[in-house]
Length: 126
Image (cartoon, rainbow, N blue to C red; front, top):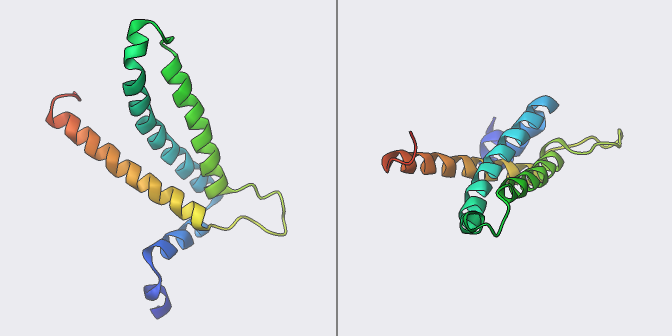
């Protein structure tokens, strides 16, 4: 018990990820990817809105860029949280990439909550 208390939160997070079943890690990766795509879409839409409204850029370009980023984010999440364990001798183990991906997902969720609350406060949502 003393050993577990001496571990950092990050080490406990990585240990928890290592004990999760594969399906839960896949779903966790998917959820974090959705958060990242929502945040990226906000930035992409803000950057391209003038070009879309002026007709210089096709209206579907922001959606295609967000979809492409979603595929990239999901690939990174799959690599970090699920792994490509083709080698039966060395199965996937959670490491620093898994912890970093989940930590980034937690920060993205906090940012999304702040943005929603900010939007509700100033009447942008609902």
